[in-house]
Image (tube, rainbow, N blue to C red):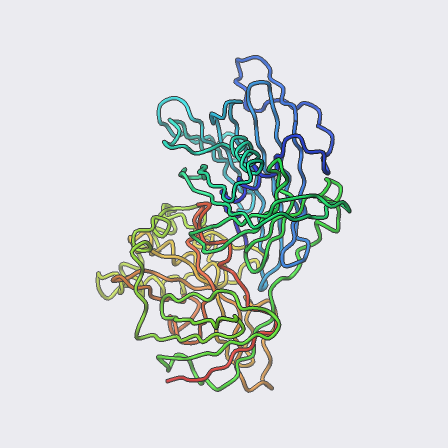
Length: 528
């Protein structure tokens, strides 16, 4: 399972990490390094590393990797490099983030170039944006990695580069501001201006390598995901510690030395952060025969995560977040909001959902031929059946393959089928996304997506195991489609999160794979 960290979050962390003038846990500057982006016919330029910050990463308290933020200066330009490696097992797969980004700017804060490589995907692509010359796009396949270069004027607006953000943070902290807001860029296959808002919580101290470091604590809002990250900053604006939702848990970023960040204890083999399937209390029979089910979820020791109300599901979480009622009603799917109906993330081509791929287009044509009519509902149901029939072999459990890869190999589990179906639907102009949650399993039947064996024939109750399916907007409403289910979808699904699998930094993918607490119980209280 490969998951991309939102770019805007990574760039914000990079800017916060570059605290000028601080002597806390700072390795000595490295030797100058050559400028890999210098023009071939220009003079040789050397970059001198002026900031070098290392962070240990932990997911729900367990070490999962590291992050390295480096600031270099060549006398006229700054270059901010953010390199991250993260891996954690979840529900039988591996969540993996492996990416490096660079942002070059002048000392005055004018951005010159942004690049990013997501090494998590099987076929990495280097995206490069250069803010000069006439608008153009070129592709270079001569090297080991495909390079896509875009040139043109920088986006309009008062957005800031990483070093300009650093200077703003330092100034506002010194002035005692209660809010820090700025705009920056999210660049990848597309580029857009995004807004980051930090709200002051108050002063505190954070222990760094055995020493207490004075900090100010801030919350950083991600409005698209409806989440907040809590960050602790030095007076210079450098990030010391942060914690916020990511994947199935809380991602903690902690300032350390390079030796600590890269030690075996900080980079262990992927550790499990998910949990075994949940035994369902109550009798449900065959979910395919039902149109409505009501579940009650309880947790004693930990609060429940936010539960979405979308598609066929309506969820109400109690004020103490220890219990929730979830209604799955096939006859009354929920309407899409106005913002969802026009959300470009639900229709765009992306690295994970490549709607221009030849095999994806072929399956889209097959769905059109199979459909009993030309309406979007008929096409959606036909596409669901086509994908279910096409992806009929198990794939590597540690990989969440892209739609194009699944279409070519015909291998995968619920993850690959959900992604491929979303891509096929987008070919037809139908807004679509993937969702994850718990899926009813017949007693004694193994579920490869769950990461643990389902109880055998001695168990009289079914279980709910982790899985993925697809949602699409049809006639203004979210409909659920499960290409891993013979029924197409039934009431034996509890949705925990959704994602467009967009490369955008503000995609709500930070928490779309949320897991229930380890002590959670689920009871079926009504069905018909």
